[in-house]
Amino acid sequence: LLVVTFPTSLRIDFAIVYNKDYESVDKQKVVGVIVALILFYLLMLAISTVIYSKITSIAIVNPLRELCNSARRLKEGDYSSRVDLNLKNEFAELQDTFNAMAGQIEREIALRKQSEENRKRLVLDISHDLKNPLASIVGYAELGLSKPDLSKDERDDYFKIIYDNGVRANKLITGLFELSKMESSEYVLNKTRVDICEYVREEIGKAIPIFDQAGFSYEFDIPEKEILVMLDPEQMTRVFSNLVANTVQYNPEGTRIMISLEEQDEQIILNFKDDGIGIPAEIAKDIFKPFVRADKARNSQTGGTGLGLAIVEKIITAHGGNINLKTDRNRGCEFTIRLPKLLNT
Image (cartoon, rainbow, N blue to C red):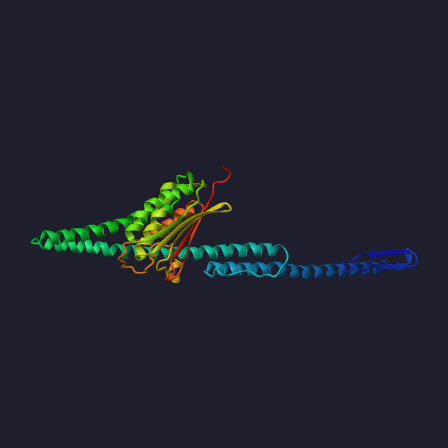
């Protein structure tokens, strides 16, 4: 009895059974059958290997090709390019990583473009704002030099115009320097523990003569207790003085000012409100950007540089707080400053 069994990849067992004595079997035929079956097995194995390789190749090559195409589009400037493989294997993780990277690149490019646009606008604004006072200085200086017979009063008027425009140009340059310093990594606050209630009362005391001179009425609501915060008194004084100056410059006589302070959870809220002319919504949305003025006029006679509120916003942010504006045309302005309280005191 001779039994030959061949396991195959198709999971079929072949058995050859001869119920004759081994010596009577045609050995050549048996060998031929065995060889044929082995060849068949190898053929099936080869076909299976080719099919498996093809399937595997498609499963690997196609996703890689899609990733390469997306990377190429990204390189060529299509920062919205994303990969969508619709797979749930290792390539899905690679897809998510690639898309996250592409999204980050797209955001950074957008920020870079916005920064470049802001830089160009800033240069134009600086040029425009410096051009007028410098032109006046040069013009009146030339007039003074070309007219030696000017009377003392006329000469004094010329000197006054030259001086005023020089002060205006100096204010602009100083403001730009301060704003640039605040945007650098070298800007550091000298914070100390301060009773914010007492501090605000002192700042109000400085502002009252300015309000009186402008013909404003006022109302204050400051708690009669100690609320401690960490702040830089010198820098915060600039915030207060800029808000006061901004209100006085752009509002008419008879405007009413309301300043209040309150606690809310772990914050203090300082409100600086007036019932003046307000700011149009289309200007208010950019009011904390450099060179944005409430009157929108580049030839404004109010004397403002358009940098005051930008500086205010930088100082408040450096203190870990925020400032926002609620306003509209002919509805007054309400600046709200939020600062963190000093806890566990």
